[in-house]
Length: 385
Ligand code: ASP
Ligand code: MG
Image 1: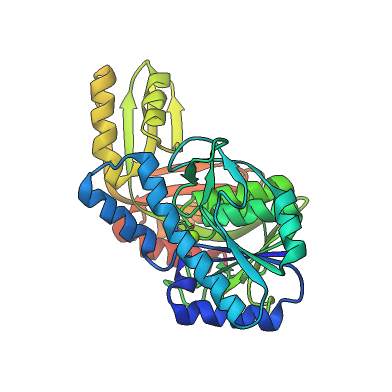
Image 2: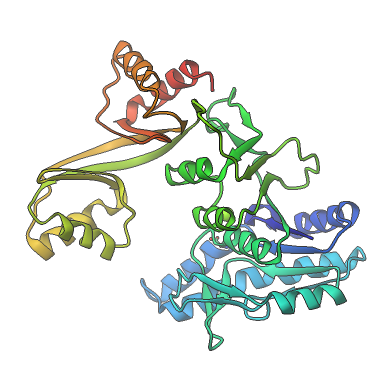
C-alpha cells in the first residue's frame, strides 16, 4: 500500500489534477491513498476573505472555512481518477476518522480510524483524503496548521504501515537551495534527524511535524517531483544512523531574523513570554544574567512590547537585517576542525560572525544580510556542497 501526497502547486489546476490521475492510473499497481493540499493559493485566499471581515477571525469558523480548500481538491482528484477508470472515492478529515486535539488552527493528530480506511480499501482501489484537517472527538472540524498536509500523509502512512511518497514542485532535497546555487548537490538519502535540523534551520523541505511523525514510526519518506516516476531522482528520508560519520550535508538559511539580547534575573519569565507568543526558541543562549535569542523580523515589536508589558524589561541589544546560516551534518563537536576551517575562511573573507551556536549536528551562526551570499558561496566551496 502507498500513501502519496500532492502539494498545493501540484494540484493548482484541473489540467494538473488530471495529469496526476493519468499518471496514477499508469504507474500505481497497489492500493493507494492520495493526500492532497488545497489548490494553489486557495488557503491564502480563504484567509484573506476571512480577514476582510475581521482581522482575527473566530478560530473555529476559520477552520471550517479553510477545510473547504482541501475538500475541493480531494473531490476533484477523485473525479479525475474515476474518469480514467480508477475506483476512487474522496474523504474529508471527519470521514477519514482523523481525530485531533481541540486547538483550532494548530490541532495535533491523536488517532486515525485505520479500521475504516482498510475496509474502504477493500471496496475501492484508491482513497483520496484531504490533507491538513481532522476533527475533535465530538466531530468539530479542526486544521493542523499551515503546511499540515505533509503531516496528514506521514501520519496515515505510519498508521497504515504504508510506503509514503511526498510529491512537490522540487525534484529533491539539495545540499543548498538550488534556486540560488546552480551547482547544488542532490542528496539521495538523509536521516530523519538531518532533515529535522534542516527544517528547523529554515529549509523549506518538509514540514517538521511530518518528519517527527515519520521518525517516531520509522516510516521512510520518498520526496520527489510530481509526475516524475524515476525514484533515483528524488530523496529518501529514513532512519539512518552512521557510526562516527563526519560530514557537512547541507546549508540552510533563515533570512530576515533579528537577534535580541537582554540582561535580567528573571530568565524563566522571558521564556514564559516567548512561549505565550507561540515563539520557537531559536539560537537561545543564557550566560549568567544575559539571555539572547533570535526571532523573525516581523515578530520583533510584539516581543519587545510583551516583555515591556509583563515585566518592564528592556531589550538591550537588537541586531536587525541579519541572516541565520546553519550547517547541518555530523561531528561538529567531536571534530573541531570543521568549525576551525569555517572560522579561518570567514576571517580571511572579512565576514563577521555575530553569534554562533553549535551542537554535534548543527553549526548555526548569524551574519549581516549583505554578507549572506558571500558566506554561502564560501561554505559551498569549503565543504564541497
Ligand atoms: N493548504 C494548507 C496550507 O496552505 C495545508 C498544506 O498545503 O499543507 O497551508
Ligand atoms: Mg506544503
